[in-house]
Each structure stands twice: as structure tokens, then as C-alpha cells.
Image 1 (cartoon, one colour):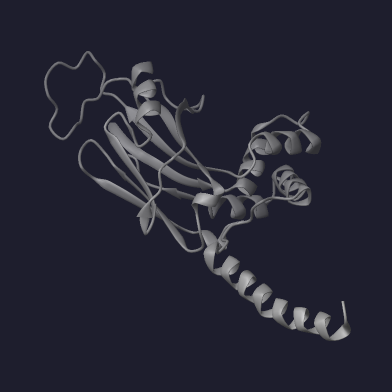
Image 2 (image 1 turned 90 degrees about the horizontal axis):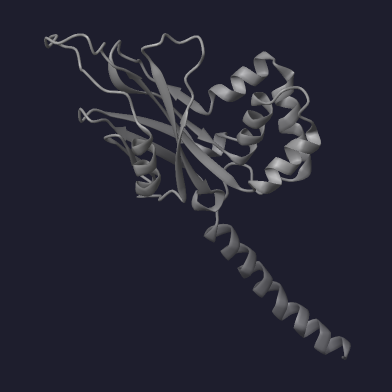
Length: 230
């Protein structure tokens, strides 16, 4: 190829490449950190092991808490778990025999996973009470059937309706219900975590909203600025 021909090819290729990169940037604006590299996983692992005020401040950015009444069913918290935050949570929940290599293996098995967790608190009134009590909502214990029904529905659990959206609703790939009742809670209260699983690529830059409407018709709403999450 002559120098003149090569120069013409270079001149032609330059605007094509610039147009390609511009289209890529416009088509998929990124927000939180993904895909994670091995150094990100390692960094998240050691953040979880730090048990410092930095860890508490980090986790607080990913969760919204709501007041819980003395009886009935209500939303206790809504959490947006990015791939990075999930590494922190998994490490935090494990014993000290859990290594950085274990964290990398678990991340590889759950790559680019995003979880929206809604914790619902249920405190039924004692079954011995036979007369209605004004202002007290009587509810029964959740059953395994409630959990199985939710896993098929993908957007509801026991009368609670869930919507995750960024301008338009985003459908979860999977839903699971997990008992997360702390051992120190009284015997009349249970807590269920409703985990909605998404692919990281389903989210773009900007704000994600999570709305949960209870059986009583009341709605709680949480907003997460994904550009400020890791």
C-alpha cells in the first residue's frame, strides 16, 4: 500500500472510530461499578473486614429504613445491592475463615448480579385475643406457600406489591423470600427478606426507584442515585 493510500485510509477510519465510541457512550451510560475486576473484589473484601465507621457509612448509602408499627405487616427497609456491595455483604456475613480468594470465587459465581432487598416485618396479634381491638391489625404467620407464590409472581409477596423502575418498570429475573429474623427479636415478630435479582446491565445512569404497596394500600418509596453508589 502506498503512503498516499495509507493516509487516505487513516483519514477515513478516524471519524468512523470517533462515531463508534460516541454511539457506545450514548447507548450504555454506566452508573455503579461493573463489571468488577479482581482488584475491586479484593478492595470490597477488605472494606468488609475493616469493621470501621467507613464501613457503616458505606452501607448506609445503600439502604432506606422505615418506621415499623407495633402490630401488623409493614416494610422495614429497602436496600439496593450493587455487585460491589454484594461482595461487602457476603464477606460481612461470613466467618473469619472466609478468605479473599473465597470472595473472588463467590463473585465469579454471581457476576454482575444486582439485588433489591425488601425486609418486611410481621407481628401478629396473639391468637388468644378473640374480640376485635380498635386500631390493631390482626395478621397471621407467613407460610411456605406465601414464599413459593412470590417466587412465581416476581413482583409481590403476601399482598405486598413491588415495583422497581428507572422511568420504566424493570422486571426482576428471580425472586426469593428468606427468613432474616434476628435471634434477639421477640417471639411474636418475624422478618422476611424479599430478594429481587436483576442483571447489572438492566440499570443505567441516574435514579432508580423502588415502590412497595402494602395490603392496606399504603406505599413506601425509596430512591437511589446509582451514580453515587459503587
